[in-house]
Image 1 (cartoon, rainbow, N blue to C red):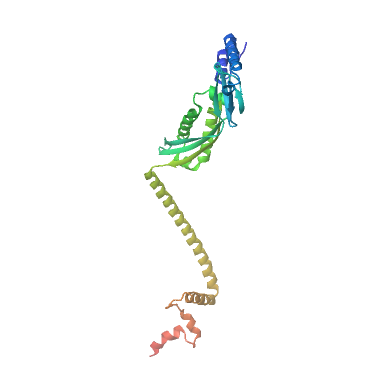
Image 2: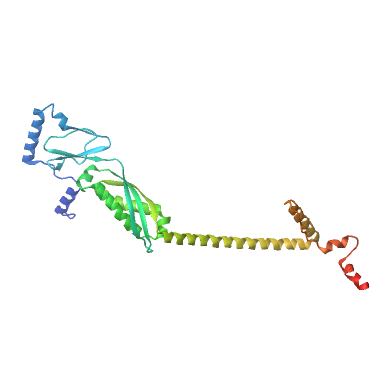
Length: 291
């Protein structure tokens, strides 16, 4: 006794993957014999009807009396199709580009956005793509839309804007798992554009501008603090040598002279006059008292 899946479930699973009992039965063999006899009678005219050319990037799923002929699709090259009892479906194995139209999404932080994207996928199992789903491309297109809305609905606006690659990878994983039974392999998912309302754009721009201004003020304050520390150190050096202050005055004068100014106002300390002609500031102050 089998302890796993019951026999009806097994049969349903086998039917779902497109592989079933391939015995034609008595009626099937009779119809097969008549079709083959018809091909022989009408030869060589029947060869133009029975031989089909399958391109390199295509595969053919052949149904004989409603049953799939093989687990694997036929092609590329020439295949034989019997008249009246065989029907084949061509499947393109090239990569398909699925453009997702803009989806209106309410993010986790209650912001309404419009997001569009693109999905690249290909069919790797033609039998599964024909037997397991009615329209594989339409099903993949609708599934991509719903998956995009579901994934982005759990993210905030900042996460959507900053983590596009991670979100696209998670969408690709979900799509690849869901479309595996359809014979679909999702190669890549890209989020093209995220559109937000104009008022929100203005608010975000104002916030970014305020952040930049605050950062500039902080940098300016740090610069002033470093400059004050340097000036303090310089003043201590100048206090140890009074002549260094005079040399600094001369350097400032030469710097101002190179700017081609017509008028130069230069402060001159009184202690410089002490060494000129023996005149001191105190003696000059006492002369009027003697008079």
